[in-house]
Structures are given as structure tokens and as C-alpha cells.
Image (cartoon, rainbow, N blue to C red; front, side):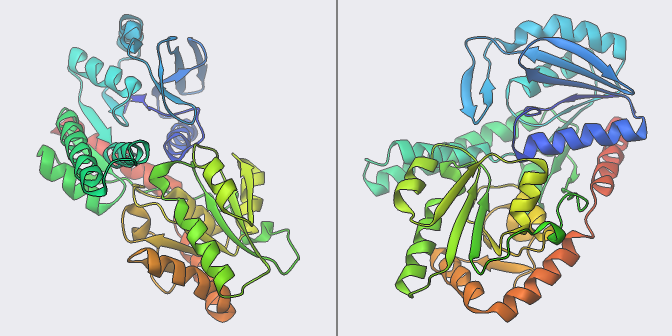
Length: 384
């Protein structure tokens, strides 16, 4: 299957980019031909074995969307050049990953070339937009703010569903999202889960020897991650007279300043990758992941592979990764999230059991099986 792949995020540091890069690496190992189109610092093309990489430069009119991620309203200026290269490559299917400039270009070219389009969902943009709006307009009365936030979330989701109707098949990271998208679009779909690199993430990489209990968060420091709940956990620990703990916060974003001002034990590492990230994961005792908007939650599996259980919320994709009271805990509300964090610090026997089971579960999840299922979806899509 000759695939033209248009990932919205490829060079950045986030779960979508990481998954996209791993997918291309899988294709390279399997000698599967892939034409990978993404946004980069400059327009250039290179080839590595069965993979053609085409980086397209964004214009000066690009609008910042997230850490390192932008939207270029003039990105379609690359259309004729990309079309020429696609005609030479002769793809059998085009795969897009979202609603940003790169995927919009891919979707248009699929229509222009009359090629089957497959769309994978990676980011809950509707929830992100609603939460960022709520942060910016926090001065509004709560009833009005909540009503407007719900309206924004609903309308953006409706627009996204309309966009995904262009696809012949939809891939989604959890069953909840898959049901919403297939029902809304009328298109068939299947799960596209995530794997974890157990050769990189391992309990063996723990390097700390002290008695400090380390809570951790890994991800973008943005409003949609619900990070201010971490300060409430810290406050509860102080109220209970706890000492000998700290919070390790990995990532960058607009919430860093607030967290630094409102938490006493937080250490900020900035973005980490590779061995530095693997060691940081292994040095944690518990991952606290308060996000209610993540579609999957790669960091939960990476923590598990490092022998670290997670406390997550009952909203979004991470709840599907945690076996409650076995590999971690799923909180139904803020109060329960805080209590679970405290409980894991107070109960070393329960924590030890969860560390072992979290590691065992993560060890059974491979990237190869995930990407094999994607190629199976391609085969189905071209036959529809």
C-alpha cells in the first residue's frame, strides 16, 4: 500500500508528533512506501529508504496554536508543488491526522486526485478551545461563562465531524470517541491505540536513592490539562502534615508561571526527551494526570512501563488505560483525585502492588501491533 501521510504535528514535542514519527519509522522498517508531508523550518525534500519526507515552510502569517505548533492560512500555496510530487509518487490512499493546515491540504488533494481518504483523530480540539476560552474570559459570570464554553465546544465538534465526513474510514484512540465520530459521520471506523517503547521506558532507569516521594506530571502546561488541580493536591498534603515529597513537572506552556507561583515543592524540568525523560519517569512514584481532554494519554503508558502507576480522571482517553485499583486509580471528581494521590503516598504496600501490575500491563502493548492495524484499515478503506 503506497501511503501519502499528512500529519498535523510531526517535529514538535507532543503525543501526536511522537505517534506520527513512530508510524513512519515502522513503515521504514517494513520497507513500506510512505510520502510524508509535514510543516518544517524550510521547504525541502529528502528520502530515506522507502520514505520520502517533504517539509513545507509555513508563512510569516502563521498563527500560534500550541507549543511549537502553528496554523498557516496560506499553507495552500504549496498545493501545486505537492500535487506534482504526489502524482509522481502515485499513492493509493491519503491519511490525515486532524484539522490543521497540513491535513486540510491532504484532504483537498485526496479530493482533487479522487483518492480514498482516511482520517485519524488525535486531539480533542473542541474541548481545548472551550477550556482556553474559559481561561481567557474568566471575568465573566460563571453561568454565562459555562454556557458560552459549552456552545463553543459543541459547535467546534460539529464542524470537526463535518470535516471527517470526507474520510472513507475513521481511526480514533478510544471507544468513546470512535462511537461519537462514526455516529456523527456515518463512516466506518476502528480503534487506533498507542504502543509504548519498553526498551526506552523501564523501572531499571530509576536513579534516585533518597526517601523523597515524587509525584509527577508530563505534558504540555496548558489550561486544558487541568493542571491547577496539582496545587490542590499539594495543599491537601500540607494540611495532613505530610513532608518529604515534591512534584516533578515536565513540559512547557502558559500554566507554568501560575504553578510556580502557587506550588511550593514543584520542580520544573522543561521539555524532556529520550533517556532524560525515561530516567525522570522511572524516578517518579506516582504520575498525576488531571487532564479531562486527552484522547489517549501516551504518558500514562510510558509511566506504567517505567513501573509508575497513575491517577487519572474519569473523562477522556486515559481512563481506558488504567485498571482501577490495579495499575492506578480513576477519580470521579476533584476530591477523589486529591484523596487518591494522598492515599498512594500513605499506603506503600498498595503502591508497590500497583507498580508491579502497571509495568506488566505496559509490557504487553507494542507499537508494531498498533501500526499493523492501521495498515489493515487502509486495506478496508480502499475497498469501500
